[in-house]
Length: 104
Image 1: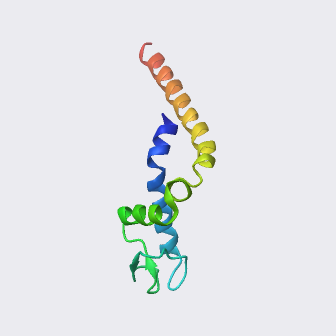
Image 2 (image 1 turned 90 degrees about the vertical axis):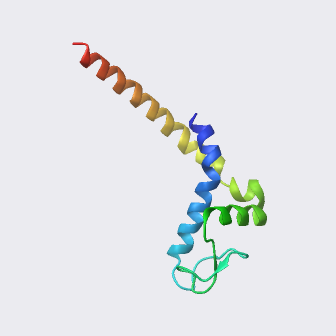
């Protein structure tokens, strides 16, 4: 379940990270994406992603699905699978513990 959810939402995470990096770059800094809107926060008059849908379109158009929207997904699975397993284990343990406490 965790892998499926991560696979579906990963492109949105890629766009979010791109938008954060462009905002942190400050005036004149960062690596703008060509074709994005001009001006805006932290762009110093350069190009930047204005919203999620525009970011998805730009990344898809410039780098495609595999190299752009899903770049790094396999490495992310190494993080997500154990985290999801731990989450399920803690949930089951807590549920068992609380069920045991309420039956006494």
